[in-house]
Image 1: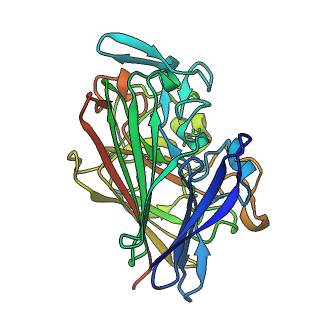
Image 2: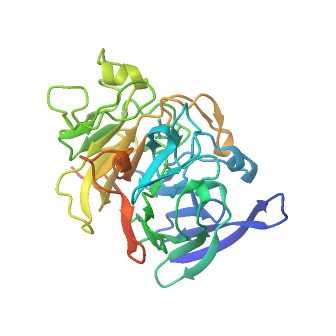
Length: 354
Ligand code: GLA
């Protein structure tokens, strides 16, 4: 286990940005940066023991200043969409930036992925790095000073553990997620259409139209292209003649995860690439996950001269339902003043065993 730090570049203000490489005994590693608390790479062994980098990302810090696709990003204070950017808390309505149509997406232009975080702890013992920042009252329009930390740990079992912790001095909205795009054949390998996905989900939240605000209902996945209860290729039904998929240009929906109990981490999804035989299992304590099939990736110059296009990666963003703060059927994403926000998501990598 080892953690090494290197320079990544500078902000316009002159502040230095670093990359931390967190390696385990096998030589597999991840890289994270204090700019945006972004996960820059995950290099894990394939069936031949060669390391494959299985997430999309950039080589240059300047590219992360733009990062319109949110590669590897820590999304906060709120992941996903809020109708009209309006957040009611205790009878008062707070206005978030309207950065996608009239709605808020991923908290707007001043998201946590665009901030320089402090390094709170580099733990050789845990093989973990903790980033922290104070998100001030009214940042992104939201109430409360929110002191937040994100820990990235890389274990000897090739698990990437992401632990969010925070506390606010007023009741507020908190729904953190990570926006990594996975490609289990390697980030440079093109479309993920032939990779398999299975999710422990019987219901999803249909959207009203192409702006992707949920109707507020839960719909059964059975007998629809949204059914991933048994593994199937991401590309199998992605272009199906099915209204929900046509509106969003592919999968971009929130799936309800079975056996939700606050604070309990359980296995919720598994993905697999037949060529590398790399398997990724997702474990989380959140009630839902946004499965996004990279529909809006147009042309991005990625790491090592890779070019990413539509469906070069898929996201499994663990979270509350989109717009949950405005939907009474959904789980409440409100964090009470003084209470601890604590959420864990694990991406566990292995090679397929027959
Ligand atoms: C999320 C959204 C998508 C898209 C991406 C970023 O996954 O649900 O619609 O906005 O972020 O491109």
